[in-house]
Length: 397
Image 1 (cartoon, helix red, strand yellow):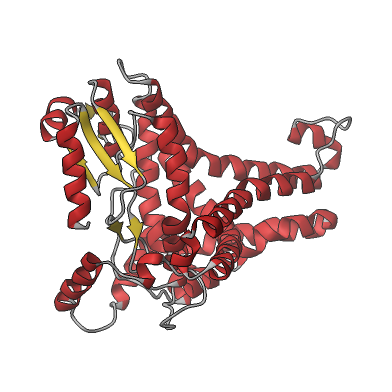
Image 2: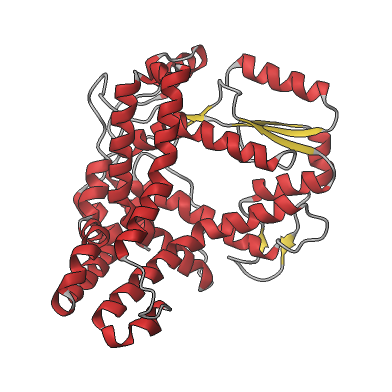
């Protein structure tokens, strides 16, 4: 974090004796791979707009993300003692994803918890490949689903309870989408029982294209609105210009759409493991680990390939008219190892045409100092193949 940002946060806390925690919206930096740069662009360009809306709704009951924030130590010490939940992991034991719980406890004690998307000079790094992302996501899935035991805790504010529910649904949405796809396949394979699978009668059928259009509108229109605003307020210029931002958004939408079925399967599996009481642990994310071979990617995703092939193959044989609609969801699953491996490759272009960010174009002083320190610590050489294989093996398990 920039010193000026930390100083401003300290001044705000000194000026408001009810402010218990002030959270920034950190920008993702130092991404090198296609996967990492996609996440970096989304976090830097689009997240602040979504964060402003969330901050408006949350008011004084904002979030805590566990880092890049300033905390009033006396308030935290008096309010945020966490109990050990009864039972065995994953639902029992120590509370995970504890930062959300700590924000809720601060709010319950009467302290103000705010997030300010306008505070710049706050940075973090993210996963550089889909396997590392899945490891981190599996940890968060376990922690968020554990929060179901805390929703009814006495004295919590409404928004804190809603935050727990929203965090749970962020992961339950994946198996629900998977169930929708599964029932759609069954409805196509057994048309005589269609109403039993879909819940709709023949009187008011819902065209499948209508669902696709609705999803596209929800996912794409907000990003285009951010682009239009950036063209008028000059923000796009900091990201290389409106034409570069438009290319980045189009590429990000296409890239995330192709990867969505793979991420859907990985997240659904994580949810099922937690619901079945399997404790996946809390493995750390490996930093600076980029390239993944096809073999390691296949080891982590062979079951996704098999599921996609069975779904598309059975539909093509028994309901070929539906296979075309199912292909966008099943083909990426079939080619999951290739997608995982290719997206983990670093970009060698010094000035890539897309996914450019303001902090990349004009690095801040603290970023330059951070890179210099990291360079002095780094041992030259490539990441070991053992580390990559262990990472893939953990996700495959």
